[in-house]
Amino acid sequence: MLTLDKFEEASECVKKVIQETKLVYSEHFSSMTGNRVYLKPENMQVTGAYKIRGAYYKISTLSPEEREKGLITASAGNHAQGVAYAAKAYGCKAVIVMPATTPLMKVNRTKSYGAEVVLHGDVYDEACEYAYQLAEEHGYTFIHPFDDPAVATGQGTIAMEIVKDLPLVDYILVPIGGGGLATGISTLTKLLNPKIKVIGVEPEGAACMKASLAEGKVVTLPNVNTIADGTAVKTPGTEIFPYIQQNLDDIITVSDDELIVAFLDMVENHKMIVENSGLLTVAALKHLDVKNKKVVAVLSGGNMDVITMASVVQHGLIQRDRVFTVSVLLPDRPGELVRVATVIAQEQGNIIKLDHNQFVSTNRNAAVELTITMEAFGTEHKARIIGALEEHGFRPTQKLTSL
Image (cartoon, rainbow, N blue to C red; front, side, top):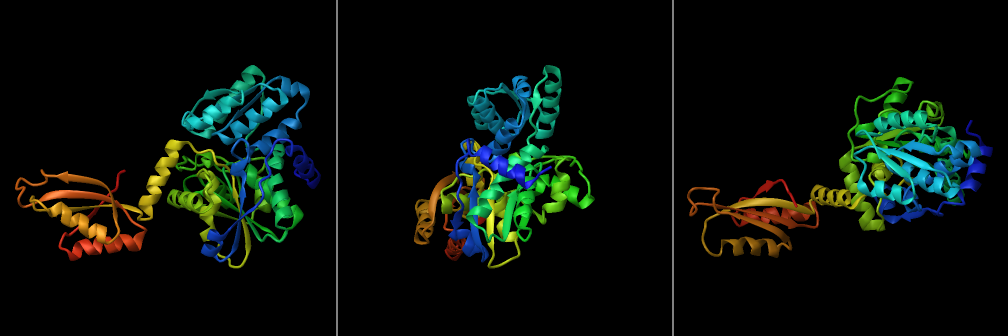
């Protein structure tokens, strides 16, 4: 059972290994939403995510014999690092099964804490099935990433800190993958103050909890497809599901495109790196149909590899019309390129790539194609640049941007 006594015990226990993550007031998101928005930056934990809380508390509840057998778990990355770090603190062997698609940074970080990493399957569910198989073969003690009341209790210590920092909080937004974090936070929040609303947030491409709540029972999605790899779960936890049914007030789903924009917002306005799953709550802020409320968005983790980061930034700039591409047809004669560049410069556009294709037509005197990729301040500025090109007779055609 998830009881107040257990939450208080867990809160004292995890203090040995966690960083203090005080709430950060967001002027940007507050002005954007008409609420007072605060961020709970669990991406600043020593392992880069909140998962260390549940892992450490769970291991603290095991007997010496259970620890000596060695620990095993399955994880897309953050729980893996939490278990590896906690196991090292307790002097236990740890075996972590991770999907083969897990970003290299998460794999290497997990190994750096002394864990043995086994890559298996394409998604968490396949890795988890294999981890159970290894546990049976070798006698390891299994630490479930979310479907375990003790793990959920450890994660719920976040709510204790939120209410302590902001006693009059109205809404808490929490990411959902398998449901352990949402179970812990929603259950403790309702024990402390039933008036506080706790809203879960899932990616549209992996909304297993929303589907389960709609059916009134745990269901398995046929597949998942989302850039939020930390919450790419097909089946939510069965043991914790009743707590979600009882304590979660609602679920919001957000698209991958919204996560991309949220990443840019976080980097530019708060100078913080937050992984896609951790950004679910930020992306959900504009879906929350309330005003003048105190809202806390839990940033669950910040373990994003550089390649993924570069891709997200690129797509975000394109989505926001900060980078765009047009092509124009020009007669092949001296001075035409200068004319185009001058129009763009006068509108303060910044050219970052040019492609001059002389073979678009067999008659080069009639037309060559100039493809221009440039930077702008946003949608209005982009429209001004395109309008100026049209006014000067260039007839620009928008094209897909590839940086």
